[in-house]
Image 1 (cartoon, rainbow, N blue to C red):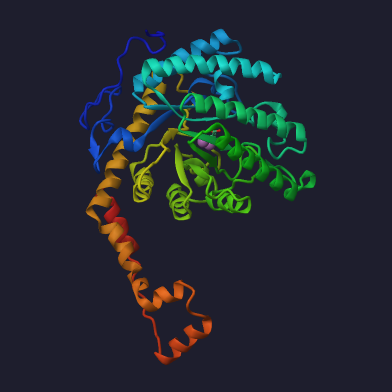
Image 2: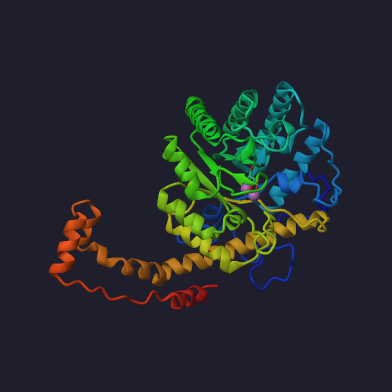
Length: 437
Ligand code: XLS
Ligand code: NI
Ligand code: NI
């Protein structure tokens, strides 16, 4: 039964690339087969709770611009209404998954027990709605950055009682995620970082964060949660220096604390850009290190230096994203989570729908382009051929630790080696990419 929030509309249909209907998909056709798999099963779209149903449209200069019937959602009645609209939107968009923080779905209290009670009630409401709609949980997470108790961090807080509170919160949120058959659990270290070294002990905070994540992994095994634990890297914002700067930094942290086989990464487009990387750089790095998990799709404004969380709108950018994901074997338990929000002047309910329709279509178009790049083979073949010299017996011996610098020197002299450069052919390769976009 409809909440009336979106008016009287049907689930968004697929009408094909020639459609001029703004409330229809032009490329996202869930059942279309791409490389032997349904599009829906490749993309594994998730719609997030926080940007759509919690953020009121504020910016540093102005307050609320969105007028939603469940605002300010400071009691359970309004929270239940918010859940009705959220699940209605997931269904209208035909998104197979959603994502949420505890803080998004219920009123915020000072007492842990009050928060826990409301979270349990919402869990039961979600379980019934998931059953009724078929919408599944891609991941759950704990918000350990909004309430002022977390202003100096959660796991990295100088006060051990905040560390304990954060641990208790992750325990509840992971257990709720598990009981809703969530496929992953995310930790974004929203305030795990620092503003000034003058009040910060870096070694102490690293030890705290390492122990905290180990406890999370221990608890996952204890309760039999088989989903992935995902760390979401971000270099700055809200803190000036965030510890989970980028994929490579997170990998070093995981190695240092013995977690590289337990934890993978949730990579976000806007965070990659803030770190001075491209999204595909971060994805390919995670794949090379064996820790690729999932993605948060959005885009940043390239001029602002801020995590603007806009909906993706460039096929050429997103095509390379899926190209490297497909090269890595596609998503396992991960998926494409729209961690994206409207601009604050887009105040109508159908703006929420159109933003996702456009984003889902961009991803679908990009997936088709990426699949064509792989199936046609020129790009992967080029890279393979470029490294083909490493297949020789001598090259394999160098890699396998069977040669020393003395050996290399002796051979270079004996054979009078004078290696000749070959073209990297970047423009040729860029032209090939453009064939598919
Ligand atoms: C913020 C993060 C956040 C995480 C979930 O920048 O992207 O939204 O995805 O806590
Ligand atoms: Ni995110
Ligand atoms: Ni973000």
